[in-house]
Length: 143
Image (cartoon, rainbow, N blue to C red; front, side):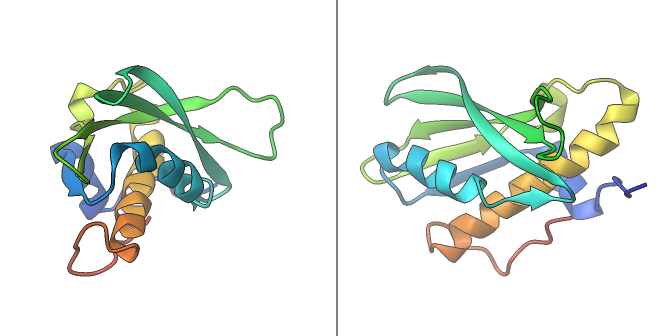
């Protein structure tokens, strides 16, 4: 059985939420997210993103799902969400709301989906840093 406990750092990120200004136009963030997220993994799981509520060009609420690619036909398991809003020319604000503001599916699911979502958030921040869209002191641990 895999260890799905979260690192202290991932817990800290999820509990406090993440709010970063990203140096990219709002029209370019969706293709960026699709391209990057298609490469993220955690254990046997991959991530899929789908649109939630939103207003075109003003506010997007995106739902992050985990999928086991070996389980064909398995429903997507929602882990959390990210919000995207323009913040001036060439800048978007990307926000991961604090974990307690997001739905968690039962006590036992908290560690499992928390680890998967924590890994997702770390991989996303690392991608933004690698592409020089945000500054981090170093790459973040992804598990």
